[in-house]
Image 1: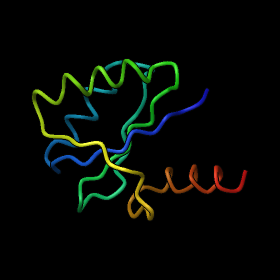
Image 2: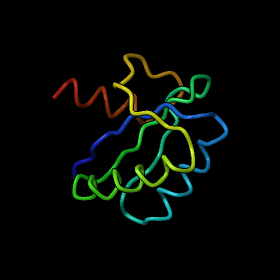
Image 3: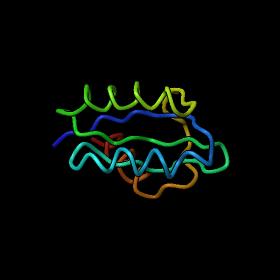
Length: 91
């Protein structure tokens, strides 16, 4: 299974809500916090569910402010994303 990464900047207080909503749709993906101080998160979405994830984000934009951002160059807080990025770079 391939994962697509969607990077978002949101309010710190909305991280748990975003995580809860996405993970309530079992099998679509997970949310990881990459930089807690800047509230940068990544949605790691199963490739087959990328359109569904974008639909969820469109709906969430009516409730919470969130902006898609480019992939951060240095990941501060998330060990799993660091490992995945390193594997992709070395392949």
